[in-house]
Image (tube, rainbow, N blue to C red):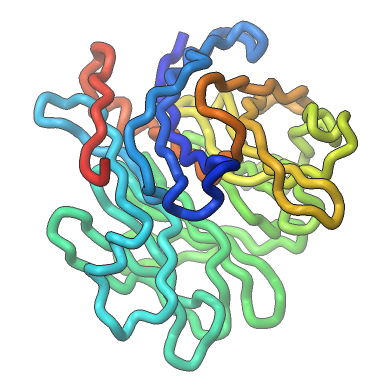
Length: 308
């Protein structure tokens, strides 16, 4: 049995703008099979009007969620940074955001930002490229970065300190979101073109589709489904992702949250949430193994920290 919390940013159908975002926390209990996993169908609301979120550690080692209001974090950035966009927040109160260089349009710079001190560091820049997604490495405090190069190819970079290493260059690796397994032996990603979920072995480059195409309930209802916000459980046995659905030619109507086993192929399981109204999950955030190992072994005191 493995128990951990899931943070999600929920956009209400009644308030589709950023002020309508709610940050919710969901307790998830992982069992031996996906069908036997348990969760609380009534998530706890910890903040409103916020989208950026992550995990921190309390004074006694409790794992605490922290959130930032959608516009608040931008006030601490220098005015020369163009079109900043917060991509990810990490355990300990660090955020990573992209921006465009003065001569560029696509996000070709990656910055690291300390929430407590307000300090900022430019950790990667490659004019003409585009940052697609990134993932914190819980084992060595490095950063996995997926980029699209000027000629259209895609790469997976690994950044550790001042060293940047190209870990993967493959024609089938084109992620909108991706996650790295705890051992670093494989990755899973949502493909930018067909929007399916794949697993790639980093040693053999073998590619397997993880999800059964059209298995979500929205597909069975004849709706167009967009998969996004891929996350991985601390032991790499489960994947989590959100969907948004719409009718062809119409606006987004809502979405769902799904859990998926990392064994292929797999039937996703819908996580039915109650008491939050209709809407769509904008972003997910699952604590990594480093967060959980640093936290108190006893049940965490899940208290909102900032932004609420």
